[in-house]
Length: 185
Image (cartoon, rainbow, N blue to C red; front, side, top):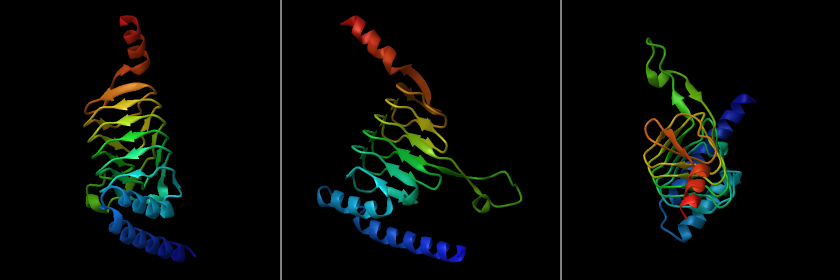
């Protein structure tokens, strides 16, 4: 039985790669509709159609995308460890979400042959991720947060934070910034 499940999963993966490959680079308009249709079959939990061209998706069955979320050009979603993206999330071009990593502790074995470590990525509602950011396995980005362009996020980001850098660090809390702006007006 396990053998048949592996074969079925492999066939499903090949079929996804073929169909998605046909629509991955379709330009605006009709391309978004085609991408949404193909992804809807494999991503049971996709609720947005704002999926621009060139997005790479690995293990679509482990990815959930909320309503009104935008995935811009060249986003890379590696769902091996699971990815959950909330509602009203803005993901800029060139962002990578990597939910798995290579093991490298055994010196007598090639790194490529060592087991992967997995960790689910969770991006809560109303988050903005700037272009070129990298979100690594096991990270949770709290509701209402902003991740600066080019950041490498290796640890959780609390809700309503502005965070940036490599490694990514919290710069300020959005609630504090709102209070300061209100005092100036």
